[in-house]
Image (cartoon, rainbow, N blue to C red; front, side, top):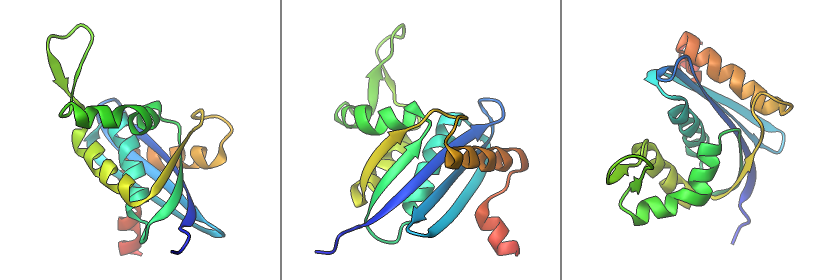
Length: 161
């Protein structure tokens, strides 16, 4: 059996308003190879954009890999490492303090996609403080903010070039 490639995926999401115009970005690194991806949605939330950045990065991989995902989102990190299995076990609902009964999990559509992608790869999550000293996280923030503001995507730039 072949050892999977070791890939680093750095992600970030941004929103102008919450909800509002949203953007996401990621950087994929494998050896000396680097690829930047980014995209936008006209109306979204910051959490959705954080999830979309991870989904886009994992979706870009053409084969199963060992992926270290670096994120500044506790929502993404905790969702993948602590909450996801319980959400699935409880049919995608949870008790929310101060609200009656059980409430549906927000962003279930994206969590389900991410859960499927997670099974294709060996994923390790690393949390970093946002807008601090991690240069790739700062680059992702810049790209995600640009995409949200200007409603751009890396795919549309490739098609128009």
